[in-house]
Amino acid sequence: QLQLVESGGGLVQPGGSLRLSCAASRLRLDYYAIGWFRQAPGKEREGVSSISSDGGRTNYADSVKDRFTISRDNAKRTVYLQMSSLKPEDTAIYYCAAKTPGWTVSLRDEEYDYWGQGTQVTVSS
Image (cartoon, rainbow, N blue to C red; front, side, top):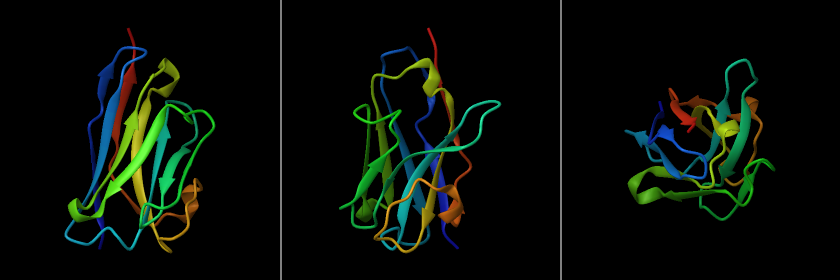
């Protein structure tokens, strides 16, 4: 079974940057599309970005477009989310998730089968 582990969260000031990583253990990642999701306290989980299995397709939520960049290194079994120009409203627990088929991208969480445990991102001065 695919296991995903997120890392790279932390406390950052507004305007700062963080890079999140989503690493797969034991199984190859290149069959799966990967999505990043986030959930803030008292809010529903929302899709942030996703990337196809070969990295050729990506999509972003409007709220993060032009600030976040998703990428992947299948040889390292890792997907990244580079976050820049962070705002307090980006504060949330960030999760990565995997789905098949791998050639489509989606921000709909119901399409994803495997989830990581999440990493906290706090944007505050």
